[in-house]
Image 1 (cartoon, rainbow, N blue to C red):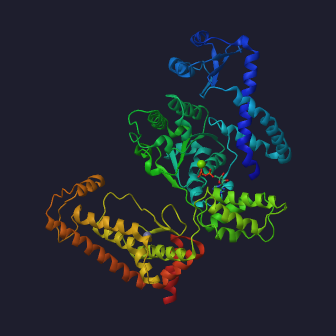
Image 2 (tube, helix red, strand yellow; image 1 turned 135 degrees about the vertical axis):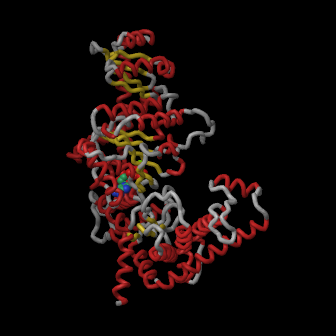
Image 3 (cartoon, rainbow, N blue to C red; image 1 turned 30 degrees about the horizontal axis):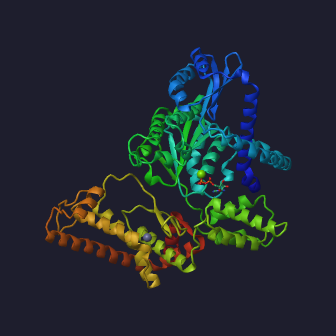
Length: 607
Ligand code: ADP
Ligand code: MG
Ligand code: ZN
């Protein structure tokens, strides 16, 4: 499985080049069917064109009388500007049944001839594989479809191919059910999200999940990557989006998947040139398309990104990508399952302990783990062994971590312990508070900048925050630092972000929301971030130095009070704090329910 994946892109490339060559030879042989641009326009005007596609400025059209003509477009843009409206009209009227602007650079003969020799060799190998792999042929053919970017046909992946990620799958199951039987849900008047945004670091299986949703539901998978749009001719990006949605709506349920949506979906007006560039046109078209269909057309749009923060807010509005699913790094259990999946077709020696591998690969993504096993297989091959040994695996772990493509960090034991107590501190204080959202999950798997994370479950959309709630937020934020001081006798830089946020909240309580009794119910600073920062930078405070000093004092008092409150709570729950940290060190991830169990157990022990 993995070996074939390694060479698959090469094969596709070779086949495409081969096809290109065949077409070119064909065309030169059948020169009689070449038409001039003028004649081509006439054919369009006379509604004689049934299908056409363009490749390397070369247009091939199938006519209503079943003949085929070719035309060399010396200027693609001219053709596009000239004809696109007409083409769209005729497509809408059903005269043109299929078309595809496959815009590409001009063909250089050398580029085709050179790989041609390689092509033969490639084909030779490919067929060798096909014979050996037998039943896997269909799968491979489907993948060829995907590479065309436009219509991927039915996806072969299912949720079984995605290991771990149980919560992500659970959230997506609703979409699967809907796509399987849209009528049922529509009759019930159910509101199905139009757009689902998968957010997470590269290699965590976002694309895989999207394919699996299509595979589970048995619907077509139409995909395109945001970065494909970037190099296109003006107007083509927008038209591709239009085509994509037209195809999706044409026959029945489908998933439209936009990979790397940040490439087109970046905030408008933030580009270098500003103004209306190609990317903005594409983005606008995407917004138009998403608004322009009902969920009763059975189309669900999925997109993936690792930079949700740079997306244009318009994309995230209700009726567009209003559902976000975070696809995180796998925890120890998830890594174990991913290893199992990718080890399936690999002969492992008896000494290979995948549990240990899972334990030693904190911070690895699914793609990293797949890569790890592949490296191990290569290593075994290099030593002419028939099976992969634990030693191969261990060496590969190091290679993947230290290798240039991987900056994932192995977390030293001391740092893990620190993170475990820090996060446990956040979680335990939260459990003792009343207003704060409950703990959803705690993890010490590194994520982006953070060494660990405590995730809270938002209960409802809050439109305002009470003073009590904000005070509890402060206590929660300080939980990490206090736990470090309390349990390890030393404090670390790991809490710096917590402290920044706590200070910011305290500052707002005093300056913006008038929550300090000493200062009174006066709003000195505007609530909005930019203005706030801008003002303090410009040193134009609308209040006296004396007030400023008083405010600073109040901020300090609020933080200090939260700190001692946090200390009291953590001292009271010290045993639970230790149990939680130990649990984290062992399992890396802990659910809110498991945290609850620890508290229940402590209760019964007391009795
Ligand atoms: P992303 O789109 O998030 O960058 P991909 O879906 O492209 O990640 O994942 C790359 C490869 O890594 C997949 O093809 C798959 O083989 C492997 N992989 C990633 N996550 C998982 C997972 N949860 N289970 C199994 N394989 C995974
Ligand atoms: Mg991807
Ligand atoms: Zn923290």
